[in-house]
Length: 346
Image (cartoon, rainbow, N blue to C red; front, top):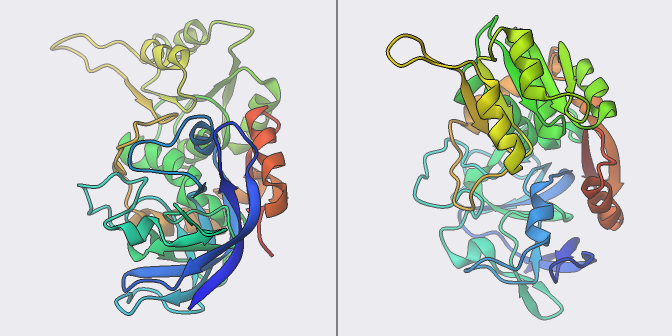
């Protein structure tokens, strides 16, 4: 038996994705087949589309790595979810206990990555979410309460986890500490939101797009810096009397990587601990999940959303159908998505 559904297929680098029917096999003993409701459109997928397949990967392939949906079928050894459950899919093990595998791959065997079929060809899929169905290892599938909307919560599995997780886990920002976030895109806005929720001050957004900076104020930025108009490092140092406690690069360019190092307060050996700079814009291919534990953190993010603190409804500014995936990719590449874009499948 198998399940057919449409998917956005990555056939060739720097070429439009092909939307066509793909055939998914039944889930293995430790797998879950999810009928998707929504998926985030993440900038990291653009980097994948612009380079040849890495060693051990092949084309055609499916893309996407954050979603919500309903369990369509599950393997016999899956215990934490059942058919009909609402779920979130992500790219980090739910308890972050698997440390010997690249977290983006989520593969302990070939079946985890291959088995889908398109026009007689095997398709690499590995829990890909730009499709009507996702076949995922059970360890990257987490329950989602039935009373929570399934569209805006689709970005919890990457954007929220990465941005907000950096604040509460990696940096452990406390009330009154200062934070500067370079890059006010989807992940940067999640970091800004979390910094505001834990009562950081000031919370500084840095970008070259004034519209994005104005938008960042709605998510808790107390100050904004247009890096095309002023030197952001000099501006931050003046505002904070020498530098922030924490500076986050949510862009990943060489220039911003250098800027976050200079934007934090200096330390003096043996007398004073300096500030901390953190890169979350682009990570190496074999990056692990860091300090994030989805089974611990996702309920926190959902609670923040329910309490009106994490403004996911406002953060989602663009919605696309699967057939519009190339429009979504083009809008993302050219900065036309103010917050975060999602695909919806219903």
